[in-house]
Image 1 (cartoon, one colour):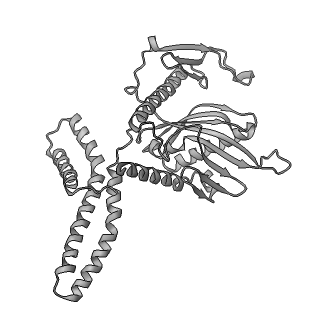
Image 2 (cartoon, one colour; image 1 turned 90 degrees about the horizontal axis):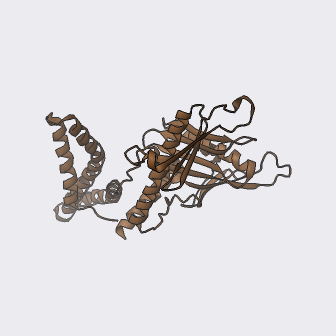
Image 3 (cartoon, rainbow, N blue to C red; image 1 turned 60 degrees about the horizontal axis):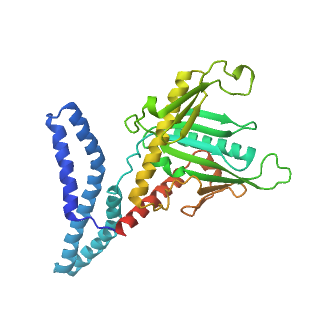
Length: 359
């Protein structure tokens, strides 16, 4: 593990103290105060971890010196025992500091666009897509997040062929970003009379939502916007006005269709939101590929063709194939109790980043 120098620790604590003094001075303009307070909020937990490392190192030095130089044998033995206890605590504190100093994903605190699509498996895949969407809804509820459906294509026997939703709240993308990929289910369908286990799949994509400043779009030059009547199951639910919107982003070829709202204006706004998010993700992927030399992370490649997790109903287990973690808690996980899975993925990602720094 990379050892953080005493000089680096002193710099971190000095900057924290400097920011504190600036905020307390009362001399900052409003916009500068916001900027300084944001930097302080981000730096304070890092400085706290740095302070703990500094304290443990200083205590270890004193105890080690006592254990070597103290004339009284009993005191030497006591100091040596306490030094061993501090020495055992130090690696954990240094690792915590190293993790807090890792480069942060700028999108971690953003809301996310959650997209789930039924894959192979027909009706059973659509039902599974519905199970996954409910799982994420319940997880979001437990964390106080808000889930707003953007569009949904329901399947005849239940579930979804496709569902897209916006998830807003604190740290949404940081917690959900490792969910992108192919999720596989193994279970006996209700329509299966022979009791055979079927395997089907759904694809999940989690994208950080873009802000207007992230993606510059010239609507006159970059977009082709077509309006038409929404398609539906017939009867009263079919719109009689041209409210459905299809937006084509000409430079990239991306196409977004939105028809869930009865208002053309609302459909266009939602479609533009989805389009901005997908363009932002394309740019993030390009930059990440350049920075990492196209090297895939153990956890977070985000490749939607990659099978990442299996939900096995007969055995009541969930297996995440990226980190070889199996939990025999399938019903609880589908109820939204996902923290054990997500925490393990985040820890593995941090370990991989630390290893890359040392490499």
